[in-house]
Length: 582
Image 1 (tube, rainbow, N blue to C red):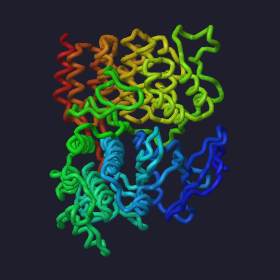
Image 2 (tube, rainbow, N blue to C red; image 1 turned 180 degrees about the horizontal axis):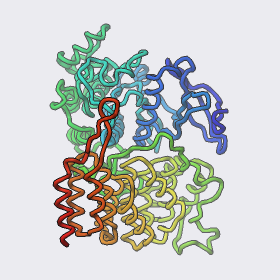
Image 3 (cartoon, one colour; image 1 turned 90 degrees about the vertical axis):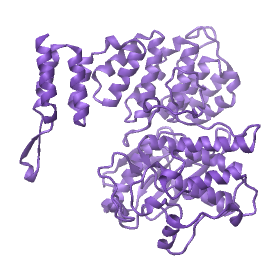
Image 4 (spheres, rainbow, N blue to C red; image 1 turned 30 degrees about the vertical axis):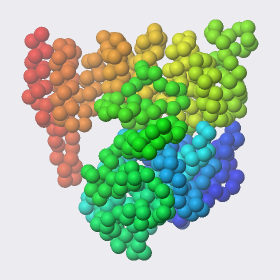
């Protein structure tokens, strides 16, 4: 028994740093994977940091094509553990060992899955840095036997790392994490700039993915050598071999052109983003198969808010350039959050379903699909419930109860963006379902996440509810826009409140004062001063006076006092004089 919650029932695998066990949650008997560090490495700080980094990075990427982490903690003896979803599938590396190479359409299908996850991760400020077949697993999900999920974020680069990467060879700013055999990247798949410690971004992952796609198509990676230094130099300077030099398989020329562009030596010459790579794949498929690709849609990030029509289960990447405000840059999920969503139903039937056919909560008919899916949820099988409803999409598309069940199922499976899409469909079809208590609870949980993309989407959904006359949702939106201590949450709530006509109800004085206090740079704080001045409210004067005097102690032995807002002195004084004259 572990941490009074998890029962170890078997061993799934073991590596140099830890062991992954088969376990179950003792309350609901839900199977899961539980990862523990080996006792002999627990005292190594660098190993612990990598383990924590892996949990944090996975927690930030709440996407169907990434392995899900539901809990992270430390036992009384200091042992770290991580709770992951249990995946029943085959590693891509094992598949390639067995089949050597794959059909090009299957390769692009798998690649599209991986790119969908990378697009989401890159927008969340995460570069994986170790994309390779060993870190991709194929599972049978939602009727797709090649549903790819990315594993192992242990060496991921986070946008909010304390120090930028420096040109120090393979041991860059993560030098501590590279000790004890922990390297940054795998030489066969590593991007040239990553191999030599230069600053990297998501294009390094796209290079690694291109190496992997090349290997899947031809049966071998483009570069291979016994000596690591030789292999790294090949990535930097050697020409990528033509497909015809590696295999006799018939692969359309547009596919080869796309992969070769992904393998460009200079990042600027590559396909620029994961989203653009997906568009390239779609264009290649169209060119090679004018009648259509035959690929089923796979989950991707949702853009443009919840006001547009979206399908409840899958959202296609929009093929046009979008502003940052339109992109849900997911996901800063707290690594200590326990996934209570999966247990939300317990042993009860969802309360929104009628207790009897004669006494429904709201006068809307519900079909057998909704009841069957609700029964699956009651048995703790949310993914099966979601897959069942997706499989009956035609029957449930216009059925509000079924859409609500789908929303609960997706939320329980921690597919929050997809859950919100289903919720919007449900309340659009039947506004009275906006009062569903479980939905409101799930929205509250999403708003509490340290996950910008999920929080943004939940705020957008509150705006949808407010537009439909839900005063409670409107009040919550206004309150978050006025007083939320998280800047991004406050700013998004303010934007949504303005869009739905609630801007006049926001306490902008309180909101702008928080901007002034929390602004990380002087230009941001100056902008807040300008907003406070424009309000024309003398109540802003005390906050402006306080801002002029913000002092930080730094320097030798922490004795030097520095006014971090000295840059505001003139601007703030002018604002104060202006407000005093009103």
